Every structure is written in C-alpha cells, then in structure tokens.
Amino acid sequence: MILDLLEDANREAIDVQSTPRGLLRVAAPVSFGAMHLGGIISQYLNKFPEVSLDVLLEDKYTDLLENRIDVAIRVGRLEDPGLVTRRLAPCNMVLCASPDYLKKHGTPEKPADISHAPRLAFSQSISAGDWTLFDAAGRAYPIEGAPLVTANNMQLLLMSALNGSGIAYGPDFVFSEYLQKGGLIRLLPEYRTTELYIQAVYPSALRIPFKVRSFVDFIAETLDDTQIL
Image 1 (cartoon, rainbow, N blue to C red):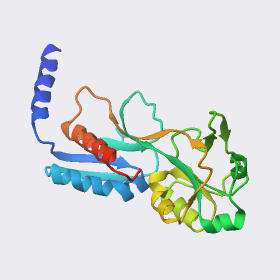
Image 2 (image 1 turned 135 degrees about the horizontal axis):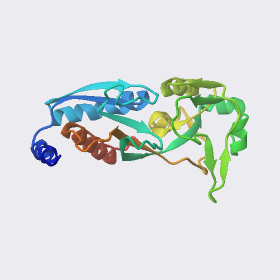
Image 3 (image 1 turned 180 degrees about the vertical axis):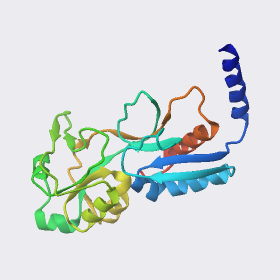
C-alpha cells in the first residue's frame, strides 16, 4: 500500500512538470458547445498542441464512466458524490419572447401571466425549479401549466421563440445575442430566477490527469474573462 502511494506521488510529480498530451474526451450541452466551446477549444489546442479532443454535444445527462468522458461541462446545481465539481461561471437564466409574439399576445406583467401563456420548455433539465421566479423579498412564484412545446434541444426552442411560438426560458448564453439585437425581449426583469452555474465535472479520483486539470483551468480562466455570459 505504501509503495503504491509512493508510486502515485512520483507519477504525480512527473505529471505536474510535463506537458498535457493525449486524447481528452469532453461532453457539453449542444448550445453552449456550438456557440462558445469551439473557440475555447481552439485556444486551448494552440497552447497545448499535444492534446487531441473528442467532443460529445448532448442536451442530456451523460454518464461519464459509461461513455468514457474525461470531463463534462454542465449547467445547473449538481449533486453527485461520485464526481468532482468545479464552478466555472454563473449562469443567468432568462425569460424571453419575440416582439411579434408580444405584439400579438401582450407583455406579461406578473408571473401568473406566463402560467397561462404558451411556453417553450427544455425537457432535459437536471435542475429543479427551472420556471420559478423570485421577487425582491425572496417570495417564490412557480410558473405552472402544461408547456406548448417541450424539446431536448435548446436551439430548437430558440428558433421557436424567434418565430413567435411562445415564451422561452433558459441560459442567457443561448439567448444573449438575440436579446442584444432585439430579436428577443427579456420578460419580467424585476424578478430573479433560480441561481445556476456552468460547471466542470469529472470522475472522482486520487490522481486527476494533467490534461483534465489543464483543460478545466483553461476554460475557467477563459470564461472569467469573456462577456458571453
């Protein structure tokens, strides 16, 4: 046992001094991966050219061990004792709809108005209370009722919202470009939403591979400097 620990310590010392290399398998949500992860990966590979990446984009909970994933980027509040979790950045959730939708249906003035509106809902959420709003006093207002559309892909919901099908709710990294350009309008901004985070998760181990540590450190630094969120 002692020899095994010493051997692990020696490998760790060598690993820390080496350059990350080898295949790194990464999982991420489709919208985040398509919109933002590609640029981060390009910068990472420029810095660490001896690493190659295999990226799996899915809007569902991916079993890391079963799919041989080294690290996953996830959005939400995660509780899994078998995984190491590192927060990378806050994730602001927003309610939004297109100008055409609001012209036709009116602008909601309170959370109850959204309960009776056509909603576009993400079906693969791993966080509870996604459609709950909170006022300045901390009172919760759950938005209930059957959605008009449910989908396991945020980009489909984004396009549905842009085309006036209903009210969408999701991470602002999905909607921010269209909110800035006026294609979507944020609703009920005086209410806050459930606090979520963009997080890196990877299997628990005594010795985390250097390529995993370097990638998680790099993406954390990049997200800290960026204005996309």
